[in-house]
Length: 248
Length: 248
Image (cartoon, rainbow over all chains, first blue to last red; front, side):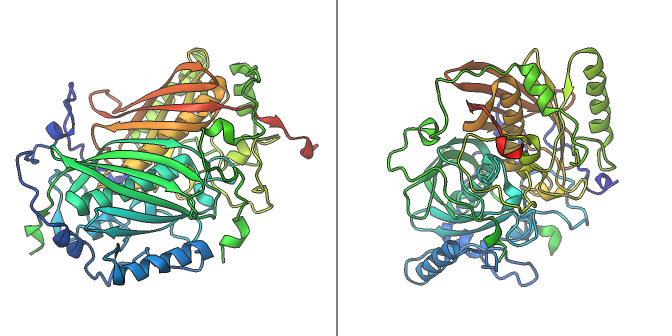
């Protein structure tokens, strides 16, 4: 029933051997330069989108820890060059005016797609998070308050919910730092469980950019840094977004 | 507002040094035997729960690929010893009558907790999946049809949504194969993007059980096995569930 509307063509072809993602993206030219400056990428990413809801703003479900750290970083956007990243319901909003260098028949008129980490609409029930990015140091902080729909072990956030949010924070940081777009690999070691409703702080850094790949690391911990929840690393493939001439 | 109801105590203490999860779970005895047979674990896991919805049953959103492979494996439950695992809205239902060897103040009377991979109620919009387990070979198959709320790159499943479902399939397989309960680490390499609405098949195997840990691997591919979407591995810590005497 529902499926009809969003069935899309398999776009990456059928490959017996798997030499890696770069070989599977016919319109990606690995020799191309990645010339957009972080400044350009950030200003394009953060432009006003009055018609799309920005989920990275406080709501009534945010606890005191989340709120006070949010305001602390908001202060740093004025004095220390940090940028609060907007967070829309779909990556389609984030890349408006551009298209991916991937063939896809997914751009139908159906509009009810959601970015996975914004899939639960009700405030406080699922993902509550906001990402702050520091362009000159190529690092990010993500404030994360998991709601009761993210449960794994009773009372605690599912390991997969944290993994997905780290991947998402990596992807935005990799894109803004060097046009890293697709996850190539991702590793995570869990140290402690995150109690639902509490605050976890993701500290993400770009370690290096090399061979068309952006390498990132993340330490997730409590606000007081006394409890480490997880350590993770990931690699993203660089790809340039193309201007979407069909929209003009 | 919402937060008040499900705020839980930080239960694993504050540890400056992090010697690993086993040290952080005071009621876990690493010397204890893991004596429950797979047969016992499976029969306990699959008992009738008429009051809880089982999400691992076909619904109108399932496409022809998902449905036909589901029926193929259902046939194997009659002839080849495969078991279709029930899938409830919360792990609290799965472990009813038992409690975790973790201190937690999370067992409040609030009932609206959800297993992360069952967080989206509307059929076809989020996770559609069913896990079949083969006890004698300690392996599982998970049929996965991602809906439009699991989006990452426009038109495709978010890498984090696949990672979370592999982690979830690992956890059920690790538990039934050898009482593996908590994810220690998880690695994933992405090869191709999964188009939303299509079928991906997760092939999970227990590689070994050693030093109170269960080691697993997963290959995720298209039904015809011509496209590999991702390869993953994970390690789970063994812990025995205790009978919950408070319920008697």
